[in-house]
Image (tube, rainbow, N blue to C red):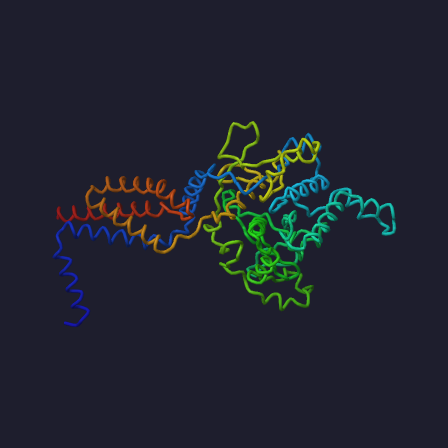
Length: 494
């Protein structure tokens, strides 16, 4: 007898020699293991993904109010500021915004984030810029005196005074948010429409600066409309030149931790430079360096940057989900989901009251101060696991999460396989000691209990325990057990 048939014979002999109860238990273990392996490919199934999203969204919502953002402060352009004090302007008044920035700088804050789109100039400046005669002295004087120009002059002077962020007291980094638009000339290498930065009247401020930088304020919106994850960098194309723009939260946390934000942006450009190609009809107008630009490497799935700790940038839908630790509600609202941010200052208390009556600026000292709006007419509102939330509050949650590395990540292999092995043995014991139907219900309830207890502890550390596949596995196990019982009855009858 050759080696292989002999081994098979010995295994069969050993199997038949086992007592019935041991054989049934071992069979349950093998069935559970096989089910785990066979169900692995359906993890990305749409139905399974939707169930997982609902479960994970509910779990994340349970963390609301567990943090109040001790490192953050919010200067809020609320309804009283926007409507009563400022008269509902179409654009955020640049002179008011300049005073808010300067107040935070003088506090001094550690980082100032301006979550207001400054792409478009205000109406006054646009009229001045469209004067027919460049020698019209009245138009030139008018332009020089506009609030837009005053803000630009302040930022240029700030950049000259603070060539390196944090180099002197009163020189916190200033992060401005940049709007994006769809490019009419470029595509990404996979054929998807490329985005390009919206031109800003503040150009070229922040282009080669360590004290002022532009960051994106774009978040990942899932198919159901909820914002669950961040986009820490955004691929953009300008005339076939690919660039990876850092997000506002990435720049803010790096600056808060004393990192060189200009070096960070350049590292992203080198490591994540997207590949761009001309859109149909624009190939003839491609610049001379198109061949070199199109040879750039595609963005990597994973890339590590130093923002005070090693952060792995990932395109995984699961790993870019961050925790919302504090919620939001309008003053006077009876619906509150989680505790609000600790330091929230209405903007009118800075811009429209006497200096002696303003709030204590020490509340902003050493914090990441975010300037943004929550007024009712602001269209920047998103659906989140904590309900409807202004975009600036989403950004505050993202900064807080990134500051503490507080996001979901793939569990290490030993934890994943350890949980799978534990559940397989546990469910097999239930099917061994209980009738099939009772075992199915008991195992399902147990997994749900584990998901909301042990799963909560794991999730608080960033590791997600997925109860969906184990519960589906139990149903398959029950089906196999039912088929086995039916076959046994058939054999007994015949």
